[in-house]
Image 1 (cartoon, rainbow, N blue to C red):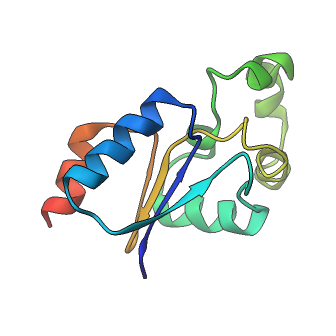
Image 2: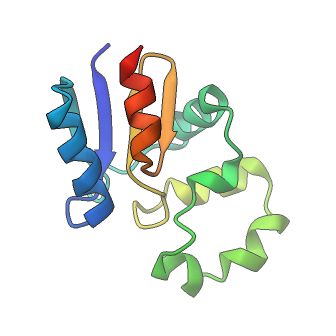
Length: 119
């Protein structure tokens, strides 16, 4: 399966990640999160495969996160409710999300990308 790169084109962090992928000559499909938000099913799968806590998929620095007061509300939601909420808007989802083989990276740390593609 081809590497998937889920991003927000106006995000400077996403731009840095995409630039690195191109420098590493990684063949990937890009998906604009604001046009094609992840579904609940995709999010369930990614959370399970990544082994990351559910909260790491939330864009905690985003305006929508603050407007919805999710810092206080998230602990009261079930995992299914939180995932369904994430699926409502790309603005709530932390990005970029990189899906490569059985690895899912959320956010961008250059060292993680370099380690993943050094294999």
